[in-house]
Length: 108
Length: 223
Image (cartoon, rainbow over all chains, first blue to last red; front, side):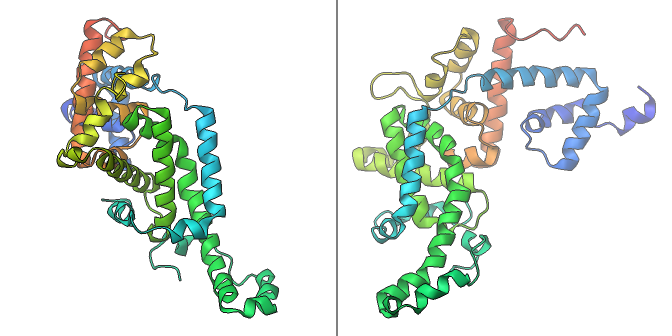
């Protein structure tokens, strides 16, 4: 690796601090590009990436498909809710705190 | 009326559809009730579209997370139904950003309310939701994380996960197994995003160390 490239590269320790966020797609684009460029040229960090990808992949293998019948019933319930919309709204009120706590922007 | 900032304001509500005009001109529509219904129709349509756009695509995720919370398929289904009902009522106030986070917060609060009604003592326990995600189920089955793991053929991974603390198991289950983002997991657990990140990263480091000790990870050090 030439000297200029080494000087321009962020050090491995900084990359490893954000490596998991990078693999989770949680880094902003600029930082993600920097990490990706580093991984292209740093075998040690690339090994770290590979190990964490294995861990993540193993965990993702634990996903189980939902019960299709339960999912179908929920889809049907959602459709029914839309059809009886006025009634669904009219009996609201006692649990308004639940929605209010959820906030208007998805942040509590 | 559509609230400012509501997702309904951004939805594609038809503007003065000429097809609606004949109904409004009929004698029936001249009654106050009919006129009111006609006036509410575009809002109801927009609400339905918003519900279809933001809520219905997330049913699978809601059910998966509800299963983690309840560890019982029937309870999970009931919980999601309650969540859907409340989401429908609240959708006019939803601004269209972060629908998953919004829904997960409703799910969490709904579950919390249901638990409160069943067992008032739990109201005093701020860690109840977290404990629910990882503790043994009411029928003695394993905790939420283990439910998803119980059918696995990888005993090393199961053992490594079970050695994690409850809060670490919960965040791994939500992010790595259910596929939530850090922000969504934070909403679900009611903790800051930074807490999710630090717990998750620490948990994975521990998993990695355990799996490497057991030789369960592919060896890449010799390349």
